[in-house]
Image (cartoon, rainbow, N blue to C red; front, side, top):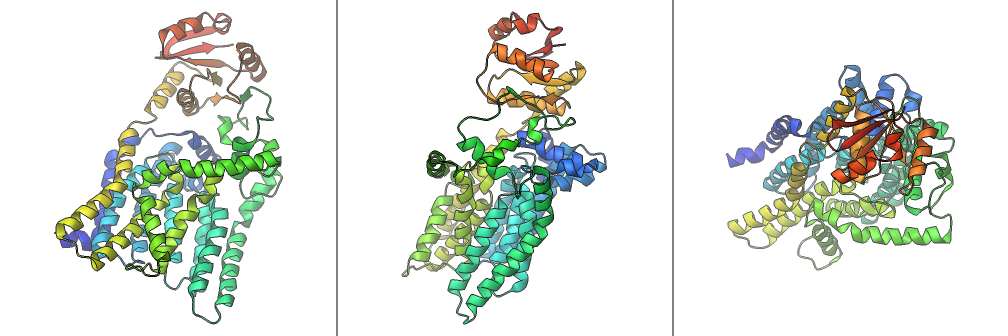
Length: 523
């Protein structure tokens, strides 16, 4: 039985993932996050034939494009993304298995890794509507090429690597600068390790193949983005984040941010504003200093994110680097394991400039599993361990990777369900049109935003956190707001609001539509 669990590890893992995905699906049926507004809007516009309006500088298109056929079959876009995630999870298990074959790890530990990946990938799959899960699959396919022994000398692998990078970029724009840096550095590392007398020529040739292929294939999308936004760009995400994190204040003077198009539901469809184009982290000495400060603060604050991957992840990366640098090490680090360590360092580096989340570095779960398993394999072969000690070491290693994913699955049960309940109440109450809400707290505000979008209403965001009642009343007139949603947690808040000028001048005040929400019809 144990032998079959090892020899048939991949099919068993695939079957387990498929079964658990189907069984758990009702618990995560309602998962819907703020970013989903943009991705689902792109998918719906492409499905309706409005390709130009679907072009978006913030929301990379590949995830949305994959959902388009499902929308055309009549499937709800939100469900469509979840189905794509499930299929992505199966492909990710397969690609991870083939990546494992590139390393000197025992068959037993390979089986342990692939089984460990099942709950890890399930948690990623249900985490958000379309977070970085598709990128994780493409990244793994990319690493299969990079971690091959003949990568440096094989033109075909260089070409395939660049093609995969194109899809990875279309999945998330961050892969554009990452590929340029990573591909150059990894080829340089192999160049330094090569004993070929023509290695310099080979290095230049590899960069030529990779970059020419990459830029040729992405050029139509670059052209489309640049044509829409009227400046040469591969993405608006970098400038958008730079503006949010580094710009002192905002140049937008109105209180509300409305949908960018008449058929859009929220400004999150495309939050780009033209004046953001002219801002740069190098605009002034103060912004340069702020950027440097933010970079180092993000490095320090990233420790919990690495721990959510595994509480051993930082130690594993550090151990590989130490053993590689140590000339007298009893455990030798092969080239492809060191490539994993380089990748683990480079991947989060760009995010340190502005903002980092655990999902941005999900690839480290696979890389750390591989590096850790190699270290365990080498240690078991070099030092004497009893059977009980081997079981204990392996169990602690596996537990470090599945603790947070299991907690994430637990915490996300029925996440988003309340937004659907509010949306249904809005539909039943015939609440339709332009909506804004009180700025109670970020979680409640996001909940009302999600509910309004699900109900196909236009929801107007606040552009700043400080404003007066007079500002709200002026904005209602300026933007022609139809409904004001007041969210409260205490009865006293409700009573005070019902005596406000806004309620007194309203066409209708409904306190019974949904618990904790007062719906004010303004006209």
